[in-house]
Length: 81
Image (cartoon, rainbow, N blue to C red; front, side):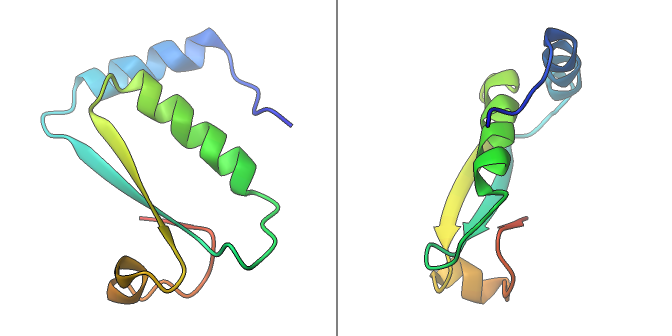
């Protein structure tokens, strides 16, 4: 089911992201072997954030067992850093 949001939220996100001085990377971790009831919603929200940021926010996706997951000791999925 699509995440519901309105244009006011998008305008507010754009206003906040316009104040960022440096780019931001969000690290998103999933376990493809497990059922994830919230992953679709999380991915939709991340997409909204990326679009509203005009390139200032980037999402990097990783799977369980990836080097980044081990580096950050991610042991519960989904996870967002």
